[in-house]
Image (cartoon, rainbow, N blue to C red; front, side, top):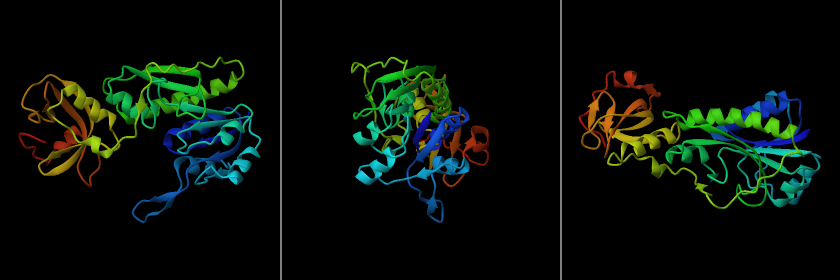
Length: 299
Protein backbone atom coordinates (compact mmCIF):
# COMPACT_ATOMS: atom_id res chain seq x y z
CA UNK A 1 0.00 0.00 0.00
CA UNK A 2 1.02 3.63 -0.43
CA UNK A 3 1.35 4.97 3.11
CA UNK A 4 1.96 8.30 4.81
CA UNK A 5 3.73 7.62 8.08
CA UNK A 6 3.24 10.05 10.97
CA UNK A 7 5.28 9.62 14.15
CA UNK A 8 7.97 11.32 16.19
CA UNK A 9 9.64 9.56 19.18
CA UNK A 10 11.54 6.30 19.66
CA UNK A 11 8.25 4.45 20.16
CA UNK A 12 7.37 5.08 16.51
CA UNK A 13 10.63 3.91 14.91
CA UNK A 14 10.00 0.11 14.99
CA UNK A 15 6.64 0.74 13.31
CA UNK A 16 8.26 2.61 10.43
CA UNK A 17 10.82 -0.18 10.04
CA UNK A 18 8.08 -2.82 10.02
CA UNK A 19 6.13 -1.03 7.29
CA UNK A 20 9.23 -0.75 5.12
CA UNK A 21 10.19 -4.39 5.76
CA UNK A 22 6.67 -5.49 4.81
CA UNK A 23 7.15 -3.93 1.39
CA UNK A 24 4.79 -0.98 1.72
CA UNK A 25 5.56 2.21 -0.18
CA UNK A 26 6.17 5.16 2.17
CA UNK A 27 5.00 8.26 0.30
CA UNK A 28 6.33 10.60 3.02
CA UNK A 29 7.18 10.66 6.70
CA UNK A 30 5.68 13.36 8.91
CA UNK A 31 7.21 14.13 12.31
CA UNK A 32 7.75 16.98 14.75
CA UNK A 33 10.33 19.62 13.76
CA UNK A 34 13.91 19.40 15.06
CA UNK A 35 14.28 21.09 18.43
CA UNK A 36 17.24 22.39 20.47
CA UNK A 37 18.83 19.64 22.56
CA UNK A 38 22.09 18.81 24.31
CA UNK A 39 24.64 21.13 25.84
CA UNK A 40 25.02 23.20 22.70
CA UNK A 41 21.26 23.53 22.27
CA UNK A 42 21.58 22.77 18.58
CA UNK A 43 18.54 21.63 16.65
CA UNK A 44 18.32 17.84 16.83
CA UNK A 45 16.09 15.79 14.51
CA UNK A 46 13.57 13.51 16.19
CA UNK A 47 14.18 9.74 16.25
CA UNK A 48 11.70 9.19 13.41
CA UNK A 49 13.27 11.99 11.36
CA UNK A 50 16.73 10.45 11.74
CA UNK A 51 15.51 6.94 10.90
CA UNK A 52 13.51 8.11 7.87
CA UNK A 53 16.52 9.94 6.43
CA UNK A 54 18.66 6.82 6.97
CA UNK A 55 16.06 4.87 4.98
CA UNK A 56 16.11 7.47 2.19
CA UNK A 57 12.51 8.57 2.78
CA UNK A 58 11.07 12.03 2.28
CA UNK A 59 10.63 13.82 5.62
CA UNK A 60 8.19 16.63 6.35
CA UNK A 61 7.92 18.40 9.70
CA UNK A 62 5.31 21.15 9.56
CA UNK A 63 4.63 23.12 12.74
CA UNK A 64 0.89 22.78 12.07
CA UNK A 65 -1.45 20.97 9.70
CA UNK A 66 -4.25 23.52 10.01
CA UNK A 67 -3.30 25.54 6.93
CA UNK A 68 -4.88 24.88 3.55
CA UNK A 69 -1.48 24.71 1.85
CA UNK A 70 -0.24 21.95 4.17
CA UNK A 71 -3.50 20.05 3.81
CA UNK A 72 -3.33 20.21 0.02
CA UNK A 73 0.29 19.01 0.07
CA UNK A 74 -0.76 16.09 2.26
CA UNK A 75 -3.69 15.15 0.00
CA UNK A 76 -1.48 15.43 -3.10
CA UNK A 77 0.55 12.45 -1.89
CA UNK A 78 -2.35 10.22 -2.95
CA UNK A 79 -1.95 7.81 -0.05
CA UNK A 80 -4.05 4.69 0.47
CA UNK A 81 -3.79 5.18 4.24
CA UNK A 82 -1.91 7.17 6.88
CA UNK A 83 -0.38 5.31 9.83
CA UNK A 84 -0.14 7.50 12.92
CA UNK A 85 1.78 6.62 16.09
CA UNK A 86 2.78 9.17 18.74
CA UNK A 87 2.90 11.96 16.15
CA UNK A 88 2.19 14.85 18.49
CA UNK A 89 -0.08 17.11 16.42
CA UNK A 90 -3.87 17.27 16.22
CA UNK A 91 -5.03 16.11 12.79
CA UNK A 92 -7.74 18.33 11.25
CA UNK A 93 -10.66 16.67 9.51
CA UNK A 94 -9.20 17.46 6.08
CA UNK A 95 -6.13 15.40 6.98
CA UNK A 96 -8.20 12.54 8.41
CA UNK A 97 -10.25 12.39 5.22
CA UNK A 98 -7.42 12.69 2.67
CA UNK A 99 -6.14 9.07 2.40
CA UNK A 100 -8.46 6.59 0.68
CA UNK A 101 -8.74 4.49 3.87
CA UNK A 102 -8.35 7.37 6.31
CA UNK A 103 -5.84 7.48 9.16
CA UNK A 104 -5.05 4.53 11.42
CA UNK A 105 -3.65 5.19 14.87
CA UNK A 106 -1.54 2.78 16.93
CA UNK A 107 -2.51 3.40 20.55
CA UNK A 108 -0.70 1.86 23.52
CA UNK A 109 -3.68 0.82 25.65
CA UNK A 110 -6.78 -1.33 25.54
CA UNK A 111 -9.25 1.35 24.52
CA UNK A 112 -11.43 2.87 25.85
CA UNK A 113 -9.15 2.62 28.90
CA UNK A 114 -6.38 5.20 28.91
CA UNK A 115 -7.19 7.46 26.03
CA UNK A 116 -4.76 10.36 25.89
CA UNK A 117 -1.10 11.23 26.21
CA UNK A 118 0.45 8.85 28.77
CA UNK A 119 -1.29 5.45 28.60
CA UNK A 120 1.80 3.37 29.45
CA UNK A 121 2.71 5.38 32.55
CA UNK A 122 -0.89 5.47 33.77
CA UNK A 123 -1.49 1.75 33.34
CA UNK A 124 1.47 0.90 35.59
CA UNK A 125 0.71 3.65 38.11
CA UNK A 126 -2.89 2.44 38.39
CA UNK A 127 -1.82 -1.16 38.96
CA UNK A 128 -3.49 -2.52 35.82
CA UNK A 129 -2.91 -6.25 35.35
CA UNK A 130 -2.77 -5.91 31.57
CA UNK A 131 -2.54 -3.40 28.76
CA UNK A 132 -2.02 -3.71 25.02
CA UNK A 133 -2.19 -2.19 21.57
CA UNK A 134 -5.20 -1.01 19.61
CA UNK A 135 -5.30 -0.17 15.91
CA UNK A 136 -7.92 2.55 15.73
CA UNK A 137 -9.64 4.34 12.85
CA UNK A 138 -9.06 7.98 13.69
CA UNK A 139 -11.87 10.49 14.01
CA UNK A 140 -12.14 14.02 15.38
CA UNK A 141 -12.39 12.94 19.05
CA UNK A 142 -9.34 12.15 21.17
CA UNK A 143 -8.73 8.39 20.80
CA UNK A 144 -12.46 7.78 20.42
CA UNK A 145 -12.52 6.11 17.00
CA UNK A 146 -13.58 2.51 16.32
CA UNK A 147 -11.00 -0.19 16.99
CA UNK A 148 -10.04 -2.45 14.08
CA UNK A 149 -7.63 -4.77 15.88
CA UNK A 150 -6.36 -5.20 19.44
CA UNK A 151 -3.81 -7.31 21.29
CA UNK A 152 -3.41 -7.59 25.07
CA UNK A 153 -0.34 -8.29 27.18
CA UNK A 154 0.21 -8.78 30.90
CA UNK A 155 2.17 -6.14 32.84
CA UNK A 156 5.07 -7.70 34.74
CA UNK A 157 5.27 -7.31 38.51
CA UNK A 158 8.59 -5.45 38.22
CA UNK A 159 8.05 -3.91 34.78
CA UNK A 160 8.85 -0.23 34.29
CA UNK A 161 7.41 2.17 31.76
CA UNK A 162 10.69 1.90 29.81
CA UNK A 163 10.41 -1.87 29.46
CA UNK A 164 6.70 -1.87 28.69
CA UNK A 165 7.21 0.98 26.20
CA UNK A 166 9.62 -1.15 24.16
CA UNK A 167 7.41 -4.24 24.25
CA UNK A 168 4.34 -2.31 23.15
CA UNK A 169 6.26 -0.58 20.38
CA UNK A 170 7.21 -3.95 18.91
CA UNK A 171 3.64 -5.22 19.37
CA UNK A 172 2.30 -2.17 17.56
CA UNK A 173 4.67 -2.73 14.66
CA UNK A 174 3.47 -6.29 14.20
CA UNK A 175 -0.20 -5.46 14.66
CA UNK A 176 -0.32 -2.61 12.13
CA UNK A 177 1.24 -4.83 9.46
CA UNK A 178 -1.43 -7.43 10.21
CA UNK A 179 -4.18 -4.77 10.12
CA UNK A 180 -3.03 -3.42 6.76
CA UNK A 181 -3.05 -6.93 5.35
CA UNK A 182 -6.68 -7.34 6.42
CA UNK A 183 -7.85 -3.80 5.64
CA UNK A 184 -11.33 -3.90 4.18
CA UNK A 185 -12.28 -7.14 5.95
CA UNK A 186 -11.83 -5.96 9.54
CA UNK A 187 -15.03 -5.15 11.43
CA UNK A 188 -14.73 -1.83 13.32
CA UNK A 189 -15.53 -2.14 17.03
CA UNK A 190 -17.21 1.01 18.33
CA UNK A 191 -15.68 2.02 21.66
CA UNK A 192 -18.10 1.97 24.60
CA UNK A 193 -18.06 5.04 26.81
CA UNK A 194 -18.43 2.77 29.83
CA UNK A 195 -14.97 2.19 31.26
CA UNK A 196 -13.35 5.08 29.39
CA UNK A 197 -10.47 6.72 31.25
CA UNK A 198 -8.10 9.52 30.30
CA UNK A 199 -4.32 9.23 30.61
CA UNK A 200 -3.28 12.78 31.37
CA UNK A 201 0.24 13.90 30.51
CA UNK A 202 2.67 13.23 33.35
CA UNK A 203 3.37 16.31 35.45
CA UNK A 204 6.71 16.58 37.24
CA UNK A 205 4.83 17.46 40.42
CA UNK A 206 3.65 13.83 40.55
CA UNK A 207 7.21 12.54 40.89
CA UNK A 208 7.68 13.21 44.60
CA UNK A 209 7.48 10.00 46.65
CA UNK A 210 5.26 10.02 49.72
CA UNK A 211 6.60 7.25 51.94
CA UNK A 212 3.45 7.32 54.07
CA UNK A 213 1.56 5.75 51.16
CA UNK A 214 1.21 1.93 50.98
CA UNK A 215 4.19 0.14 49.46
CA UNK A 216 2.11 -1.08 46.52
CA UNK A 217 1.40 2.55 45.51
CA UNK A 218 5.01 3.65 45.99
CA UNK A 219 6.22 0.72 43.87
CA UNK A 220 3.77 1.56 41.08
CA UNK A 221 4.86 5.21 41.12
CA UNK A 222 8.55 4.31 40.87
CA UNK A 223 8.02 1.85 38.02
CA UNK A 224 5.46 4.02 36.25
CA UNK A 225 7.69 7.12 36.18
CA UNK A 226 10.84 5.26 35.06
CA UNK A 227 12.80 6.53 33.24
CA UNK A 228 11.08 9.92 32.91
CA UNK A 229 10.58 12.02 34.90
CA UNK A 230 11.72 9.52 37.56
CA UNK A 231 10.19 9.22 41.03
CA UNK A 232 12.20 11.38 43.43
CA UNK A 233 13.14 11.42 47.10
CA UNK A 234 15.74 13.12 49.28
CA UNK A 235 18.67 11.03 50.51
CA UNK A 236 21.37 12.71 52.60
CA UNK A 237 20.55 16.11 51.14
CA UNK A 238 20.50 14.94 47.51
CA UNK A 239 17.44 14.59 45.29
CA UNK A 240 17.69 11.03 44.00
CA UNK A 241 15.70 9.38 41.22
CA UNK A 242 14.42 5.89 41.96
CA UNK A 243 14.08 3.97 38.71
CA UNK A 244 13.22 0.35 39.54
CA UNK A 245 11.72 -1.39 42.55
CA UNK A 246 9.82 -4.39 43.84
CA UNK A 247 7.56 -5.17 46.76
CA UNK A 248 9.17 -6.97 49.71
CA UNK A 249 8.25 -7.94 53.24
CA UNK A 250 9.16 -5.37 55.86
CA UNK A 251 7.76 -2.83 58.26
CA UNK A 252 8.92 0.37 59.90
CA UNK A 253 8.34 4.09 60.06
CA UNK A 254 7.65 5.60 56.63
CA UNK A 255 10.98 6.33 54.93
CA UNK A 256 12.98 4.15 57.33
CA UNK A 257 15.91 2.33 55.71
CA UNK A 258 15.44 -1.29 56.73
CA UNK A 259 18.28 -3.02 54.90
CA UNK A 260 20.40 -2.00 51.94
CA UNK A 261 17.96 -0.06 49.77
CA UNK A 262 14.80 -1.51 51.28
CA UNK A 263 12.57 1.32 52.45
CA UNK A 264 9.56 1.12 54.76
CA UNK A 265 6.31 2.67 53.57
CA UNK A 266 2.99 3.47 55.25
CA UNK A 267 2.30 -0.26 55.01
CA UNK A 268 4.85 -2.74 53.72
CA UNK A 269 8.17 -1.94 52.08
CA UNK A 270 9.84 -1.58 48.70
CA UNK A 271 13.30 -2.65 47.62
CA UNK A 272 14.96 -0.14 45.30
CA UNK A 273 16.72 -1.93 42.44
CA UNK A 274 18.10 1.02 40.49
CA UNK A 275 18.69 4.67 41.37
CA UNK A 276 20.37 7.80 40.07
CA UNK A 277 22.12 10.57 41.97
CA UNK A 278 22.19 14.13 40.53
CA UNK A 279 24.68 14.41 37.68
CA UNK A 280 25.45 10.69 37.80
CA UNK A 281 24.45 7.75 35.64
CA UNK A 282 21.69 5.39 36.74
CA UNK A 283 23.12 2.54 38.83
CA UNK A 284 22.01 -0.81 40.12
CA UNK A 285 21.42 -0.84 43.89
CA UNK A 286 24.72 -2.57 44.70
CA UNK A 287 26.76 0.03 42.81
CA UNK A 288 24.66 2.90 44.14
CA UNK A 289 25.41 1.94 47.74
CA UNK A 290 29.19 1.90 47.23
CA UNK A 291 30.66 5.03 48.80
CA UNK A 292 27.27 6.41 49.77
CA UNK A 293 26.35 6.09 53.41
CA UNK A 294 22.60 5.99 53.70
CA UNK A 295 20.95 7.72 56.64
CA UNK A 296 18.56 5.76 58.85
CA UNK A 297 15.63 7.49 57.16
CA UNK A 298 14.95 9.20 53.85
CA UNK A 299 12.28 11.67 52.82
